[in-house]
Image (cartoon, rainbow, N blue to C red):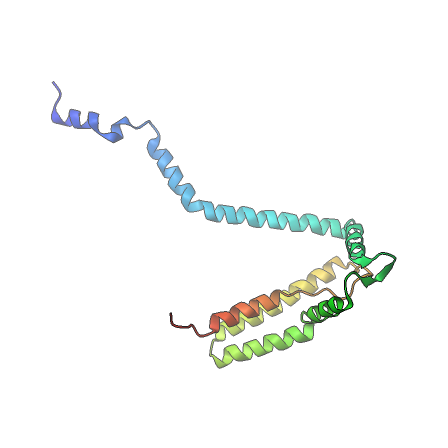
Length: 179
C-alpha cells in the first residue's frame, strides 16, 4: 500500500523528467547569458583575421592590381586623368573630399570641443579629443607601417569617421523637445 508521499512523487512532473534535465536547463541558461559576449568576441576575432589577411595582401603588393583596375574602371577610357561623369559632379566630389582634410577636421573638432566646453560637458569634449588624436595616430602609424605608395591615379584619400563622431556628440547634447 502506497502512502501519500509515494503517490505525490509518482505524479510529480519532476519525477517524469529524463536524467540530466537539470543539467540541460543549466546549460541552456548559461548559453543564453553568454551568447552575446561569445558572439561579440567571435565577430571581433573575424574582423582582426580579415584585417591581417588584407594587410598581408597589401604588404606583398598583391592588391595593387585590384586597386589599379578599380580606379581605371572609374576613369574615362583612354584618358586616366579624367574621371567618368559630368564636370559638375567631379567638382562636387572634390569639394566633399576636402571636408575630410586635416585642416577642416581640426577646425571642426576644435569648434565642437568649444561647444561642449560651453555646455560644461567636459567628458564628451575629452572623449572627442582623445578619439580624434587616437584615430589620427593609428591612421598615420598604419600608413608608415605599410609604407605603400598610393596608386598614381588618385589624389589624397581621406577618412570621415571624425564627422560621424562629432555629429553623434552634437546630437547627444542637443536639447530634447517635449513630446
